[in-house]
Image (cartoon, rainbow over all chains, first blue to last red; front, top):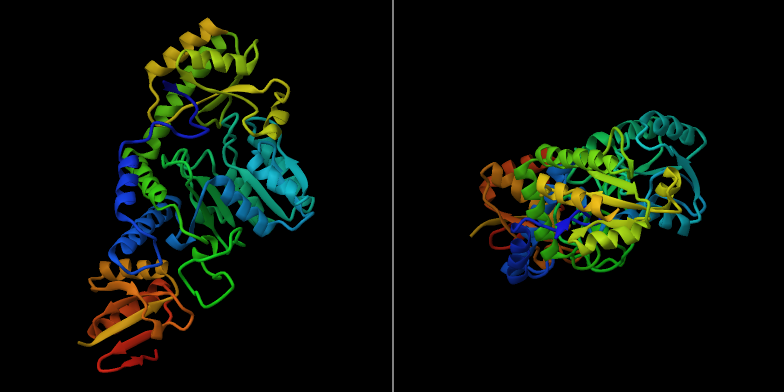
Length: 365
Length: 82
């Protein structure tokens, strides 16, 4: 299969990822609870990953809270910062993982920046939103539908200037874009472990610039005499046993990304993005491309998007069609009615795969 | 044998402390905190040699790693007030 759905999850993991998971399953008990060797090995496995994530994103290990996915982390962050009915500033390209928790809180949404690949529009509108009294800002780093890389450093600087706490959704950027959590000064940044970081599904990280309110309450292996959750990191955000095999796999995935190098992976993906955009345009598809684009591209065919994705599937090519859980992004781009077909490249993409995809795109249109 | 215990509220700061001390050449053993040293229940500690005490404490204070208490054990257990 030619896998071009890396924005949903990376699929072809480096071999060391399942190896690390298997090893953990055979050797690790519950971390941070017991004192016997298998418990201590589990604790070492978890801490090693925490430490690596801290170095990767420029924060201390205890600021790294393991979650079950990016959505989990976003929920923790949003329910910590947003009061019911509060005024919240978001970008025009947010995923339901952001908008649904905000809807559940009955938040008043200020949507800033609807124009794709236009930093000036994004920043102008964003500042307007801050001036209108936003209490909290939540924004994605990279649109999961269109690959638009938002100017998060400048947005973060504006939030700091207006003293508005903010959350960054790094679902598509962790493991593909440079991220400096300390420099951003974000209150929270949520990310999945299973996309660019090449870990397994069921893993995620919430980087914490402040103490989150827990979504789950329970055992943490610390302060067991107290009935309140610990008020320190990471324990306060990690009730219950963490996913040790998953975290072992996540560590192996991050180690792979470190070894190969983020710039090298990005360069490889960008090459395929360019080839794909040019090829699809030549074939007459309506392609959404522009500056500041990660290796994700959406296009609209003349036939139904899902029909086309099914035809690709029949040819051994995995792409995703529809709204990609981000109706707001489609509303911004004017594709809410049709949806799009999305192609997203990963660390192992190649000229040969892109050529095969384009060959089928010509035949199947 | 004389042993010192540096106690932590949970395993993560204990692990961070162990990394820092190891890099500085201070030998440690990470273990569960004995119950009589941990009033809040459940925690981890580092066992160190008493002769490393002042260096270890200084290194942790410089690194901003929070620890709970320091104990020394010879024939009995005593808290060392810093």
